[in-house]
Image 1 (cartoon, protein in one colour):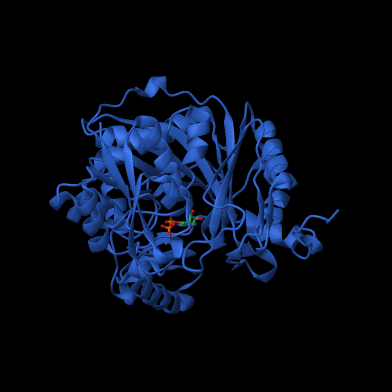
Image 2: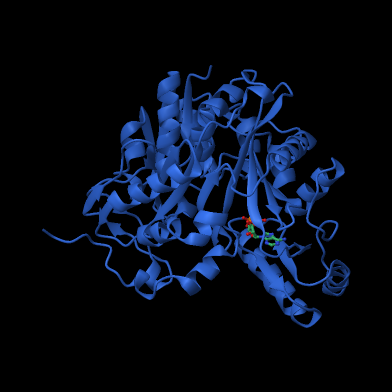
Length: 462
Ligand code: ADP
């Protein structure tokens, strides 16, 4: 087993990794920016090294500083978490060159699957259905419009290097295509330093359903079922659940097999996620692979009973998977709410600042993964997510009731949050009865009570 690892991340995921390491007897070293000196991950890790000023471009996104810290601390491995350098193949390669184990797949796998056009071609060759679209990236707008016409409008233009819902544009006809093509390419160049784009059929009202993969370094690959992540705002996930209320057992089995085939097609190892869109006729299409642990991994942990971070550490230590596909049983229903420091009344603008009072929910069937506390100051530099509330139970109804109850008792003062917005979703009849499609939030805004965003979040003073 690994003896000592460095965690190249912050926030709740850094804490989550520290906890798994503690249980396995692995020593941990945190890295932190000057803005994170008071963070819990710094306090809870066995050691901590400052890697620079607050802005992530000067700290958490600097491979050379992280590798220097890893060498000073003399660790066996680096866990990248999610975001920051987690899907940076150059960083993974530098770790490999320095003989520090990168807790994730090989750098060449990250590079292959991080290029969304090449990823599509790779899994397609293995027989996995992909969204109809261009074969690889398209440079020439005139050629692209021809492809779009062949596929049939509407189409979506996506950045090859894309992520986080950025660099994606919808085109309804050949006239608007040119403009959207240029906009997507420019946006991609700015955000990712690579302006290449590809074209895909726009699937109307799909569900986003992804499969969790675990693969060891000895060629064994299994899946741990799906997560339905259709509740999205601007292509970013807000609420995730497992199992999906939309899948039949037959479709689950078929998609699970396709997910395993996709992972095998890129010689994958460690934890990863295969993302699919499912249309209203229950046809499914691969959209991309995430070569890291996901934000929403606790949902899978609560329905399977398997600790995914421990699995990542075991795999990185060279162990074989302890499970076969048949050992994986979905025993519960779980739902995760991403609680963010943002103001729904001001178009979800970030709301950093000091948390003056903090009381998280608890009780039967509720798990909160968070790094914040009363008196904590949320720095303005990073993601606005401050916690994940995961509620679980024997069926969807109980899990939803617990999630609603948990959000109702969550007290956070001093900053604005999206808690009442998410609570309203949990009681929305469409969500409760049918689950969501990816346009759920757009429609929900139209029918939500008018005073939803005007109500003060603060509880009454007594
Ligand atoms: P990113 O890597 O930026 O997260 P994805 O390719 O994973 O981008 O897509 C994010 C979301 O965008 C999907 O969950 C879905 O809501 C929407 N989307 C992506 N591709 C399509 C498509 N072809 N048709 C309809 N919606 C899509």
